[in-house]
Length: 313
Ligand code: F6P
Ligand code: MN
Image 1: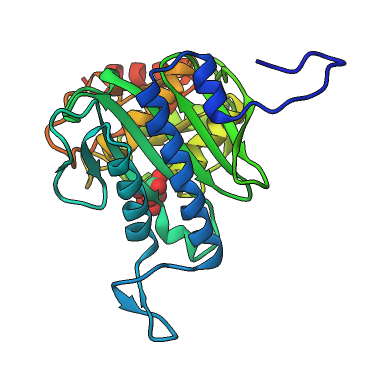
Image 2: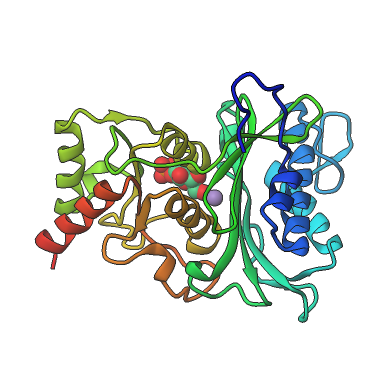
């Protein structure tokens, strides 16, 4: 779906993209409503207008924290689609059942990296969509995943299992296609290492040294969405948040963060592993399950798996 040379350029919006790919109408609805929710979220991020309830602001009005507000915006829109069975959010300790017979369930991180807003760095929303009323399933059972990146531009990247596609928000706050079927190269020259390096295991340390010896560039902002987006859109590299000596399960959450990103990266030809197992094959033990992660270019992920297998078995 690209413009032919010499033809009048046209813009493909998100809904049309989903329709032309003959996606299920209800799934199209869920994804479109998430896109709409992001308009309100980006508005709140940019203007600091944080709605009502919670703590007081300068003017004595009540305000919400940005991540709580983002959660409510998404929850409300999802509930109103009429097709949602249950909602699991990083902001809530329990899964909210909307309609046990609903068609889809979602697990999401409403505003990942929200503390980065204060220092004016990019943040994002991450969503995994499942069929039926259960989200406690391996990520490979997702029917769709997406993230929205609130950066200098607001972009949305989604997959329904037919490639990974990028959209950008235009002046009318509509998402139009930027890039279809994004591809991540086998090897990459970008690495984004989370966690404290002196707490890395020997195998992970050897992996990072290998990347450095190869001349890879360090690119880490501390925001999972922009850091993954850089690997995906540049089409190369690896993000890692490994197990640390004092954090054996790493930091990132399987349901809200890792599974959707693993789905999107795999659909772009990349890979995602906890060092021993494919992320999408892990059976979650609970909604707050954490896992170490190595995600990005396939051969780089295979390399770290190999080092872990050789040095730490
Ligand atoms: O939600 C967790 C998160 O904020 C991610 O956005 C990010 O990748 C990670 O934590 C950063 O962790 P650290 O501050 O330890 O590098
Ligand atoms: Mn998060």
